Length: 447
Ligand code: LLP
Image (cartoon, rainbow, N blue to C red):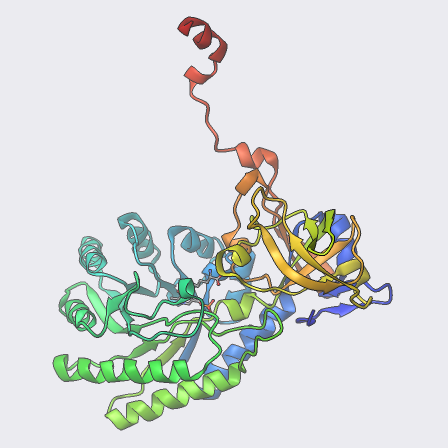
């Protein structure tokens, strides 16, 4: 396993993250456990800020909170000076609970409810990214009721297919997101916003997909969006002041993944935008990027305890851990690959090939196929790296498993930022109608 962030191996051969021995973390907080490396999160935030804002100016970096949204995470993002992308009332609520500066909040989503829009208006979020014609009408009407003019971006689906898993592509034409560019919907929507009394057109947004390695996808997208900006100016006399190019920057999960440098990404995007805008005779818009995975992903590790082992000679050795698809649905959903290390035997050389399975009741509950590890026995600790993005945020209570705790580690200190769920939490919202409480009587009556 490639060591990420502040990871190191101590003299006892234990994996250490943020100065905390993972064996001790397991003893103190139990497993499965999500561990978030605060220095690593901050380092990446700073790298984004330096590469886009300090180096080029006229740019903003927005953390896509869907990746990993907790109140503590919002505090870190706030401190690092980034903005926040939220896509639901729940993510907005989380941001507000962290007193996140509302002017730095961007509200996305393809089906915002009237209530969610109302909350966003009341909270005075900085930008609402209008996704469809229904929302355009609804938002204008709600803003009128509030006697406000709301700053909006228009989400455009540019028709670009990034090379990534099909479920995480979003820029192609056959997509539920945004206004289609080639068929003229995008221009109609933009004119609709410009004409709407209570909406203030600030610019355009697009997001072409996630886990993208090819930087050229971004420069191509920027060009397409600037050509649209030129068309907007020609047809309406209004300039695009803000160009939001979405997120998607790919990260290393397992061997074969070859991510680019954030600074190269920034240089390419910022140069393409300024050169293309100049060539088209447009003012250079402010560039906004929305990284999620690259900020949270490499900072997260999931720690499990090994339980049962099943060796089918000549076929496969299964190693079962005390979590699985409920805390990390990504291998089952997207065939994602991960790396792992035996956290209490981190300096031992690999000896055997095993497959890591979870404890959920289905065969698809596999975390890692065919990984080389030292000899593993029940009670060992397995650390799976790069699980900070779309793991906790996509976790479920499947099989009524309780969601793991999340600890934030830094300089030898570990703080719980999300408590482990209890079985009481799991039944908390269950309600039994009175008529079910007398089952024996009912049975008797029906006989
Ligand atoms: N902006 C918008 C509008 C997005 O839809 C997304 C992700 C992002 C930014 C952040 O993209 P990132 O930098 O994290 O790639 N659950 C999937 C990923 C879904 C991505 C959804 N949108 C996964 O686990 O891979």
